Image (tube, rainbow, N blue to C red; front, side, top):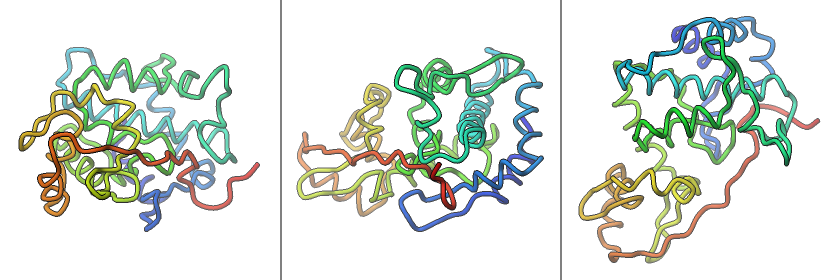
Length: 240
């Protein structure tokens, strides 16, 4: 994957914003940019990492691929209000071909559930972005094998620190992203300051204020979840 080209496209066609999306993508402009087709075409032509490649290489590669193909699903279906509109009730967008990698067709489901989740790093859930407002905010730089561990830590900290869609203290409990509910088993190995599972992950990546608040909660604080906003994390009008 041409990471330098991906970096230029992110700089050119994404914006950091103060609203819930965190990062917004100019899908219409991407669709007009010949460099976008070069990037996606390069994914189809170049071989994917071998199964025996270093774990860091596979993590960085497939996180980038997921994010690129999720964007491309929207670009090819533009205009639309939600990535889910690119699928149907009987054939959801996650199970449709999202693109080609190394000459073979892949779906977003395959990348997430068959490739990334088995690598056993729950921080991926703060890094892969399905083009939706309640997803973690899209990183405006590529993930790179030599820095992926630090980048995943940064992504996890940013998501946990997001009081609008990541984690928020509410009274004697916490309100969390639905991602922590949907993928709860992925966090089972997380441990921090006597907390385990989802709370262990949150405590590990919390800022000082939230960490202190969590430490004051009981052993089994009540958990609630944010409504998930599937509206597109795009720039400009997107109605059909």
